View (cartoon, one colour):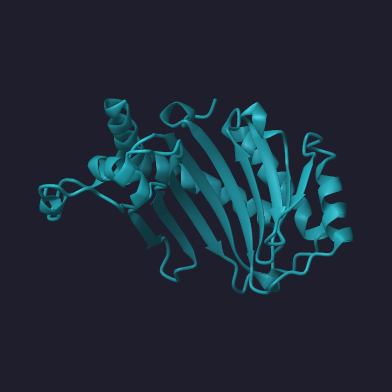
Length: 248
């Protein structure tokens, strides 16, 4: 079990290679890449081509813990949902990013950046924005707005973007995504959808001609864990967990 599994309902680690130019993946390229991924990860068997043109391959999601990979016009994407431990997620992403440049011919000149994203999902069948505001934002100079008679929060999705170096080539972003609509608030009929906290560490690839995306993933993942443990867990994850628990 990862150290974050007990803090949320679902936990995932994603990786992305972001391209500067649109990609036109051929049928042969997609199938060759996916088939070779199935050698180290044979349970990657469910292939789908979405209306957007994205090619998506995943394991059986009904198992609760599963891997997925996708190719779209702008990115190579991968995720491990509810990994048994961080090492298992690392093994998957590192292997994927090691072999991808050869099977889909990734040119470093075309790479905008590499992302490592941690995703925390919280089940809450109620006003998402209200519970996030209560957990993270009720105190402060805007407290009076939240406390106006008859008012209800319809939108509260805090986000922050920081640079981690003087050149702004390494950046991190924390954001909260809520899924409550005004219709739900008006009718009191709330969908069973998660609140999601994302934490992304991005390394821009400009002037970097290396294809060692796997090594970059490892370094970014280690730094992301340090930042999450020091700031995101105590400042965002635990308050949200505690507020949701108090309301259920």
